[in-house]
Length: 178
Image 1: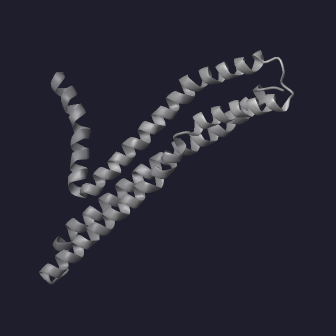
Image 2 (image 1 turned 90 degrees about the vertical axis):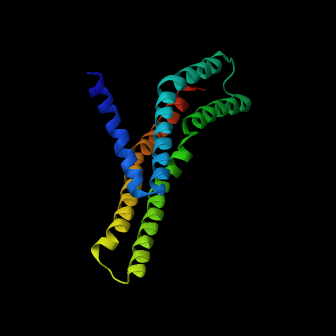
Image 3 (image 1 turned 180 degrees about the vertical axis):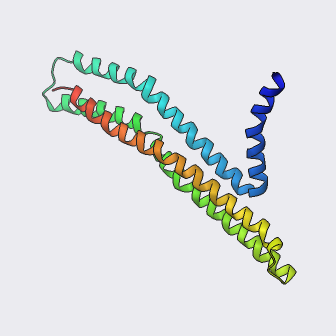
C-alpha cells in the first residue's frame, strides 16, 4: 500500500524531471514561471474568498458610520475607499499578465537553442541525417510545448480575476451610497 502511494507520487516528479532533462535548462525556467503563475492564481483566489469580504465590510462599516456623505470631502473619502479595494483586487494581476506571455517567449528561446544544436550537429558531421537532427528538434519542440502549455493554462485565471475585480469594484461603488 505504502509503495503504491510512493510510486503514484513519484511518477509526476519523474515525468517533470524527464521533461527538464530532454528540454534543457529553459524548461526549468518555464516550469518556474508556471509555478509562480499558479501560486499567484491561488493567492488571488484566497484573497477574493477570504480577505476581500472582511476588508470591504470594514470599509463599508466605516463609510456608513459617517454622518455626512454629500460633501466634497466625503466623496473623496468614498473614492479613496473604493480605490483601496480595487488596488487590493488587482495587486498581483500585472505580474500574472506578464508571466502569461513570458512562458512562450522562454519556449521560443529554447526552440532557437534547440535549432542551433541541430545546425551545429549538421555542421560537425557534414550531413543532415535524421539522427543528427533528432535530439535538437526534440529539445526545440519540448521547449515550445512547455511554454505554450504554461501560457495557455494561465490565460483563464488572468481573465477571471481581471473581470472579477472589475465587477466587484462596480458593486462596491454601488454599496458606498451617498
